[in-house]
Image (cartoon, rainbow, N blue to C red; front, side):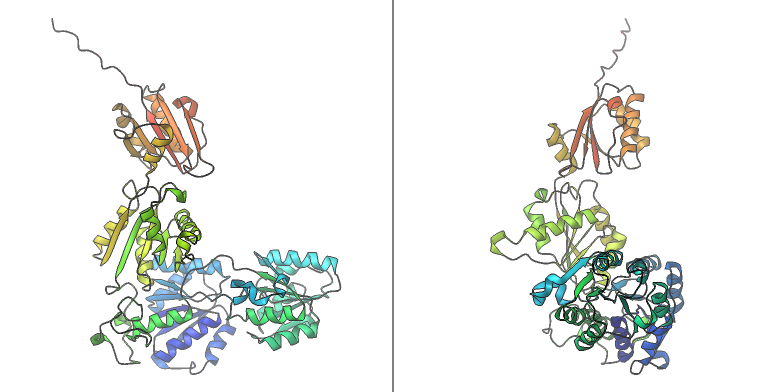
Length: 551
């Protein structure tokens, strides 16, 4: 059973695809209006075991988990609106806690934002803002200066409340919403007059948008970047050609995922055993051609739910993973081998800070050898093995991912855990380790110390080992984790009689805000440092007591 969180045009098209192909699917929509749209689709009324099971009503994470279990869902496709970030996060968490993969269906952006030149010379009339609240503030400023002008708001009913404080008389506000009781009520609560409410189902053509703007004589269009599926291009083009100023809310974040066409192609292959006509015979690298011809079922045949191939079963995918140490964070510390691995990858994974470093490598690569910057398909902030491997299972089109790690992959690195997990699960993945500059080597160079005999210590949860470590009298390098760890180290040194020891503390090495301190434990006891901190200890060397003579 496939679970679809819909409510968008893409969600309806995906549901229709599953019905047409005979795939068992359960669809969750927030409102009865969304259910009605599904049931009005061709052939969606009733198809027995091959029909759609429609769930109506908004769900929190716990209810999502229950629904997934109740329906026997083995794969979830999140086709919710690009602005429904909270819902997307809850869906991902529910899938993670239920141990099933989740694919994100990403709506294609409209050409007007990707290439503003398509709307020249009128593109200067588009004003991009980060949120609906900001759009309301902009409109309020405009109407305060031009009180007789009118605005058409097309951001949806859920966030109309932001416009309640705009234009006290509400003579200039018109709102276009879905023809539902909830939509009409939201308009009235925001103070939009009944005669100024346009309740219609979109998306709308250029001509219809233009006719509506002319009818109400709008000077402003307030909209979200809803992509091609949401009719963004037709809406903006009509507004600009009519002479409206467009106040557009940009998408909250750059999402990564698969398009509707990519997900449909993937489902054809993984659930129906159908390759794509465009692929060359024998090409096993593409997601649509992963099965032996002898294992393919007849076109349109329906597998039993328990026998459907799930994303976790990816034995035939050939993957080479590069695990790259990037040093402290400044891209100048990445080796040329690491940079080449990033540029050759089709996905960059790692903690957010690491992914951003990879993004910078891609950004600055254009001048090299006169080449244009190469784009990777995905940049995903994942770094735990239990997150990375299921994500790769759910994205069979990824064949050359790179996982970025801080410092060196052989020095207290998460690379070890990932490789152990790959071996434990007997995965057919080839791993390549690319070393980087460790924090210990970098800090030794900063303070002019040799690290050939130093004792490295990860201080994360090992405070109880301090007394024995300090009693050995060795120089030590510590990976700290904030002020509390540094305080614990200074206190342990004072209690062990090492008050005269020398400490060096470094924070955010290689970054512009890098700081290095040096002093005695008592002097550094109250020092404020963040999570990206290290320390170097040069203890006082005590003379061993001489044994009294027996004579």
